[in-house]
Image (tube, rainbow, N blue to C red; front, side, top):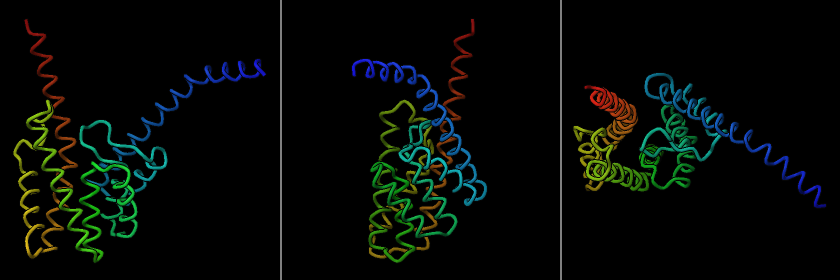
Length: 216
């Protein structure tokens, strides 16, 4: 029995490096699928984006965007692709899943609110949109004052301004759903683009700092 156990342990230890390599390969593949999906969602075909996001979700269901400080999960992307394709029932299912897995995913809240509002459940939809708008505005404020990357995010405060303006609309007596839907969709697209803009600006700053450090 002892010999068998030692053999099993020996095999397990030999397999560890392979497991790490496979894990790294999967993480790389998931990130690639997410990035391809993001480009299609923002600039191409949401149905093509959905294929990439679903592949990523199959490989790593708990994936969160890992090359940005912004928190967005793979099921949020799946839900957004369904939403952009007009499949509200599928979008709701994915976004509910996103909300249950990651409570700090503000885009999941926003898009779930949009789905609920367009599907007739406006009361709950408003609550989700309110939570998402407040979460985004507070997160951007936090970055500005307490995080070194704050200067790269929403430097004109356009997203925060629009978030708070629509937050006031949500809290008002009457809500113009047509305007609210258009505005919240705009905020979602702007945040997604801001992920790349902030990364670009940070990278450019690092290059400039390296060049200055190399100067005699």
